[in-house]
Length: 132
Image 1 (tube, rainbow, N blue to C red):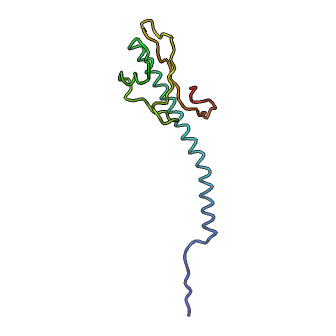
Image 2 (image 1 turned 90 degrees about the vertical axis):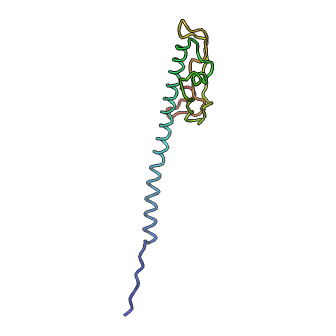
Image 3 (image 1 turned 120 degrees about the vertical axis):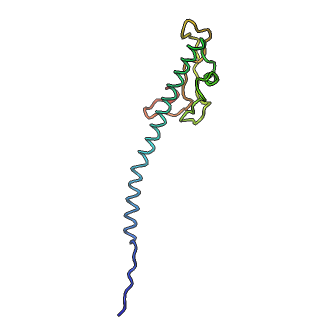
């Protein structure tokens, strides 16, 4: 009596079905992942801009003069270091906006009144990040 050895394993069809299912799941997951990364960067940019603008105002009111550069805020101790722009991944890409306006009657020197991102990219809403 000959005994037949049965081989164990997967057939080619079974492997193709499993690989097809994995590819379909990845094709659904990757766009959601990239979208969530973009929204996280946009949220970080909004928070950084809010913080920088608040600190520019605080510096101006405390010192009775507007900062002449963003580094003045760091030097004065309002920030440990400038945050990185999430889209340019650089600390020196922030675009300060200077104006001759005076924020309070005690203010002696004009300077930076606003700050924008240095990125030329467009947001998920369609506006450029450097206009935020």
